Amino acid sequence: MPNNDIVLSLPFLTGFLFAFGGGAPIGIIKQPKFFRRYGIPTVITLFSMINYGYRFPETFLITPFYVAVLSMGYGKEIEGKRWLLLALLGAMYGGAGLPVFVIANKATFCGIAAIICGLTFPLLCWLSSEKRIITWKIAEGITGFMIGLLPALAMVK
Image 1: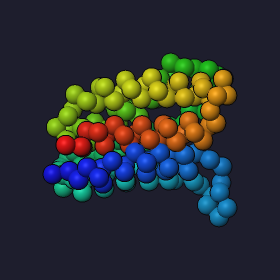
Image 2: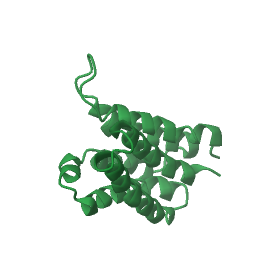
Image 3: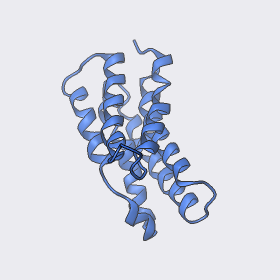
């Protein structure tokens, strides 16, 4: 049975890791992208295991799905104003949670998650790069929050 208090902290952790892992080298940390590319998948996998135990093959697939998607670059798409490609990447951010949704018996929620992230990510990029309404760190934090919120919602009972 999922522990809702623990599960609901997931989006805050992923939001922090996505924003922290998106910046330039920080002090002695030369490659902060490590926190985004491997920290988020590890945290989501651990949350899934805490709540549901280890279920093969679903639990095994959580980390590689997220690592693959979170390792994709998008800087040139933002500079080139390729909003459709950014929407596709956003949809992949939401869709990477498929194994979590299967474990939580909410696989149909994965399509909704993909649509939500597919619409939210390019909007945040646009608000940051074109309109300058929000800073890029805020856009990263919200994106990371969404990446964690959707699987968390699937895990909540």
